[in-house]
Length: 232
Image (tube, rainbow, N blue to C red; front, side, top):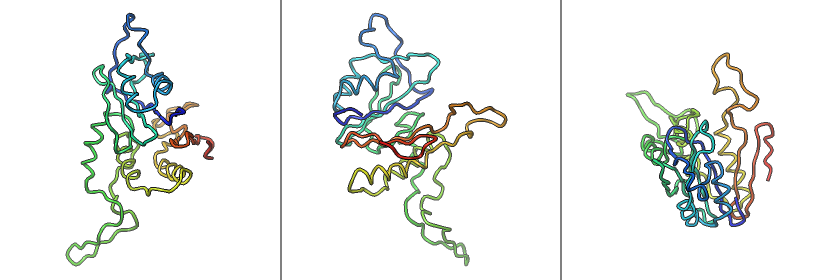
């Protein structure tokens, strides 16, 4: 986040994005994918300025072993966009939902939401099969069947429903606490991404940090894998 309240995030986007190839003749207007956030936050105050700045540069991969990425930009007004480079061309999506995970592309995730049109917050109504009375086991039964695995599509669905139904609170501190409460649902535990007998590395593919940004007061709150205390 910068002093103008413009915030940015980088998210892995494997197998779906495609950058330009590096062209020596364009090196003065070229930026690597992993440096785009720093460049944008140093140059821009608003989403409109972000779009203009991205249109002036060529984004390339700094390391061919790495995954492609996509980005989320949010201005102080709350307007948010997603940037994906598809077929070597930058594509912006207005993100009114306010949710982003990883692959596939953002428009695919929005379409996939239609597969869960039956989900709703609150309890489901009682039902009968013949003379047998059926009722829910507990609260939140309207979301029964929401996907619970760790894949990006499933996390997108959960995030969309949790974020869209969260109450609007009256101050930043309460909102930040609520954001972390929601984000607890997306912690990837150490070990689940490795098969039986595989050694788990010192820096595993698990949730190493979680962040919430207060755009109005320009503060970043975070907690880390080995310290759940929220710091600012």
